[in-house]
Length: 185
Image (tube, rainbow, N blue to C red; front, side, top):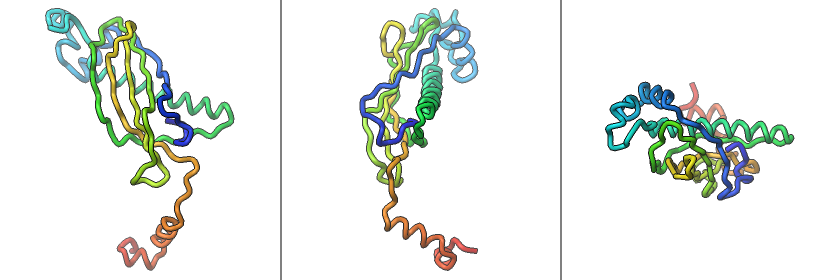
């Protein structure tokens, strides 16, 4: 999220955009990354229990992730355009759950949305907060095709390191102390 931790509202939805999946694209992705017949061979897929060609779940995820990154960059540009300093996003410590709810077929247009469902300051990394996010993807009929719950870091704008931590950090930079703890040469 390219907003400061303090500026992020819980349950605020961020539209990420949509994507129309084509048969050629599904086959290309499937051939490269998930070469199962129901992603790569329309004739065989027609006789499968899926009833036709379907996109790999990883294809659905990859498109959504790209949409999310593009939206974050756009939000950063928007904030800069307003004369504001955008926040700093960090890495993701993981994905808590991921479900493929319904197949994505050629011709489907999938709309992605990111919602921050909760947040809290990090217990282990001073100056950072954790964002608990939900990404949903719905097809043109409104059917949920994909849902994931992920965690990401966001920097706190107003963080001031406590004096105790500042003193410890300064002490580790002293040459003599560095030698004592094995950091010096």
